Length: 243
Length: 205
Image (cartoon, rainbow over all chains, first blue to last red; front, side):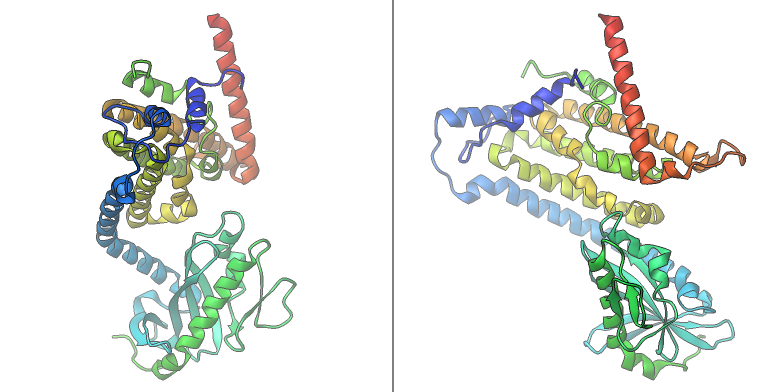
């Protein structure tokens, strides 16, 4: 562009502003740029780090408190949204399951932690399988998924990505139907493995191009979840038809 | 700072003369990524406006306390906080849209538009001017997103805000809602804006 807007020049001036390592605070209405210029000509006395950074520290505490309040206020609503989404995909993750008949259980996994799981029933009250929420570290952030298993825990019946912040255009394809379909109707044992060529074994998952880490993260979360809950869910299978 | 633009000038400049997208080429990531439809584009524009207005307000209020070598840190801290609030709000009350926008809401943190307004205007001018600047820039950003989304959604899906406008006979141009459609539309509209600006300047002179 030949006629750049006026503030482009302003930006250029600010970028070239000399750093003022021990600069004084600018006075009321005084621009940081002016203060920097002043400090370059008359070096001020060295101050303590707290004296320099008190505003950052104070803001960090205030913002932290504010965010804690926001999370406390909105957290239950967000959790409810995720729960509703979980219920909406239960019939997909456990074929034949009825949302209304689903029972929620809190069980203790092999790692000693409590896990909320969804026990899926048919409309006739027959126990069809489990939907297990799981989470683990992905490439960019924590990935939250739902793992569907049949009642005998021998087959993975489906996988659904509930929340992810993987790289757009690469890792975020883990929520695509094609990738998720790899996890439908495959044996739970032996543990799943990610491969980069066409799978030859039933426990092999084809990695996404350019997103091997995201693919492996999801697969590892599925493996870890199955291993963690296998024993405890086996004792809960079949019984306790929903009220 | 008598040479600084007034509140009214800041407001008007943000909309067209210094439009963040068409004149400054800022915020290209959301411009390309979330303009396949009007709903995500307007949601993104709203979230960005919230962050920009809050950030400019706070930075302007504390501008007298800013230390030159720590100002960028304060700007980043401020922007990140308000982006997190916007992200949580969307996840709570617009869950489907939050999922559709995915990582692009947290990525508002790195939208240069916001930190540049903190640096250029809010850290130097009083509250009223900083807010007017934020509102003007937000409107300019929303206008740019909406213009691109309008072209892409109408040509790509035959709809606008999900409402059918071209009828069932329109062979939806799928490419327009895909990434190449974003680049094509942005390039053509940028060229159009540049041509229009030069034509006006030539007439004025």
